[in-house]
Image 1 (tube, helix red, strand yellow):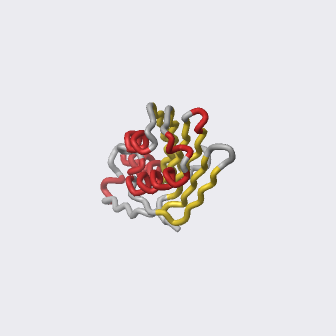
Image 2 (cartoon, rainbow, N blue to C red):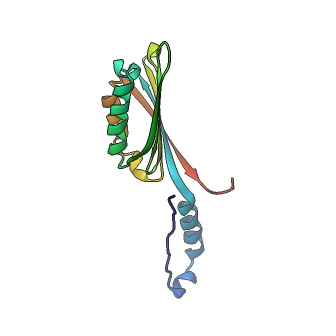
Image 3 (tube, rainbow, N blue to C red):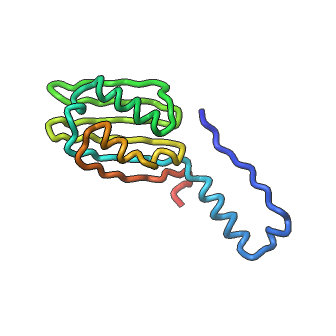
Length: 146
C-alpha cells in the first residue's frame, strides 16, 4: 500500500503575510491530486497487437520505461483475434486491449507518479509499430467532488 504524506513548515510571520492563505489552499489542493491516468489510442499498429508474447514483452519495456515494476500480470487471447493484457504495477496499473482487425490498441497507464507522461507517446509508437498515437492525461484527485 502506498501512503502519501508531506510535512509543511511555515514560519509564524508568513501566516500573517498577504496571500499566505491562498498559498495554503493551493498547496492543499495540489497534494490531493493522487495520480495521473494516461489513456493512449494507437492506430495503424503492426502485427504485434495479435501476438500475446509480443504484447507482454512490449508491456514489460513500457512499464520499465515509466519507472515501475510488475507486481502481477494477466494476459488473455481472444478467438479469433485480439489480446488483453493487464498488469498491477508498483505505481498502480498498466493495460492493453487490442483490435487487430482495425490495427488499433487501447493502452491505459494509471500511475501515482508524474513520470508516466514524459516521452511515453513515442515509446508506445515504437513498441506497437503504430502510425498514429493520441494521448489523453487525466489527473485523478481525492477531493469529494468540490
